[in-house]
Image (tube, rainbow over all chains, first blue to last red; front, side, top):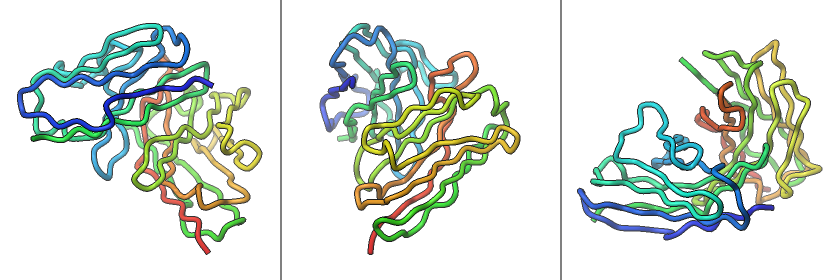
Length: 107
Length: 120
């Protein structure tokens, strides 16, 4: 099974900051990686698919990069409404693994 | 508008059984692959099971294999999860998710979830 190691587990930043979250796969997953945002009490929302593609309607301050085993998720100019937990997810032909999540707080 | 509405959760004793349902609307259900994903209280997301649009291909997480059965009825636009032998560690919110046709392995749409609590 493919394991995903996401870091950090929590993060505190100020409005306007640039925030970066990383995710490492235990084996090469090409670009089969998604990023989700989950706000408290809500279902996750897909933000980035295939490592670097912005889902329709998602603000351009969100971005993703990487391929193979190492991936990065970035929020540029952090906004108060970005308070949430973020998850990476790999998909391997119908089997999926999530990272442990990164809880983002505003200073 | 795409909607996925889960139902069937509740309080169940250890060893008990349950059937979760997910009613889909606003898209062509029979064209989309579906999944169940769960989240234990205060914990992260865990993928549970995948079923393709024609029920030909089915996968399970190792943690539920042999106890959970995923199925779908395309005529009723519905997805199901039959759960047997419930354990405390199965306590979670269960979400159904759907792909979109151009990205068949995506988990694009999510329902709001149904809570399963396993306790004596």
